[in-house]
Image (tube, rainbow over all chains, first blue to last red; front, side, top):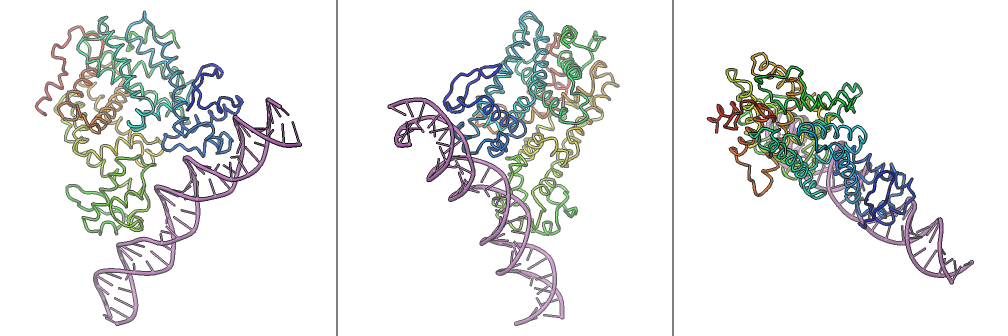
Length: 241
Length: 241
DNA sequence: AAAGCATATGACACCGCTGTCATATACGTC
DNA sequence: GACGTATATGACAGCGGTGTCATATGCTTT
């Protein structure tokens, strides 16, 4: 697939074939929209070009004029997802802030991202459900990357004395990564349901705080328990709501 | 599907149609084997009757003599999985033991189970990847059940003073459940890889201990840090290896 | 051996999807 | 208007799947 930079609305993305990038905005958007719908609702294996062309109301032949195949389109969407999510995470990181505050910031950013881009979030949850083999074909060890990023934060935290020296940073990164996926999944599943008890932001901020309280303080009784039941990060982060 | 109890080898299971249960053991086993292979390798949507009958070397028509459809067979396998896994968990639970020791026991049991029944473990990981809708159709809120079970243990632990009163048991159960899935997934993925750095039991016992150390003690520095870097549960549990 | 019943068998119709290709259309250029 | 090039279009062959059904097989009973 040929690539060329194009400013599409708010953010710059890498586009597939020339033909696709020359398309009138509206039509192009219809295609991307239908594709996002498809990948938000189905794993890659179950996604179908037939439904995408149907949704976008373009003839089947055109699809192959724009993309080599489904994976080509997927790659493209996935990349723009990565760019977009990276922005959220960058905004959330604060050099001045403590380690746990930054971690909380990342969790919150992930839910913000999911709430503002539900289809992209669903796509990324589906991506995590793909077989390892597929995942690394699309984005070489995306999971590894995410874990390494968290690992860096934790290591720094350990140097600053904010993370206990006894904790194994690799495991902690693994734990944080797994839980952030679970929280996002939970968020997306709950917003599917009609009841939507927790679909509002503030409900999820509370959920994140409670999960992080456990990760920060542990489940064993503390010698001097914190009476508020909130993490320091949560307390400092309250301005966010 | 008609049901009837039959003792197949080590454990009692509920069998589908009369016809299937009257089959010679060897043939029946071939079918179950092929099915387990299929569901360990593919999610339900991607599994195919064609491959199963191929693997079992039975004619396609026979399949429909034994089962209504793929879901019928899936239900049956899933149920026997549940029975089998429940046994592991029951053995792991110890009324006398402390809460964290029991939780560790469950994690270890899950990896033991995965190691001794890798295809069933893969099936159960695939099950967790299914859409919520499918999951509750097969087994009404399996995830919920698992979380409720953990919740009970934690609540008891809180009453015994072994779990900090500040922790939200619902969140803790959610965290424990999510991580147990992640650990099992990690185990299965690592045993797919040729290197297999951590595929041995003892490597995983270490992984579990490190994860649980974090959950027990938290990542924040403790006033009186434990010099060994292991959980009390891990120390008491060492006899297991 | 004929009849009756349970089970086995694989050919078959039908479906949804993919990727291709011959053909149609639009548009800029002479 | 004729030509050339880029793009549009949907019919189509091919594939792998499903569920069915007419027919075959084997075993038991008379």
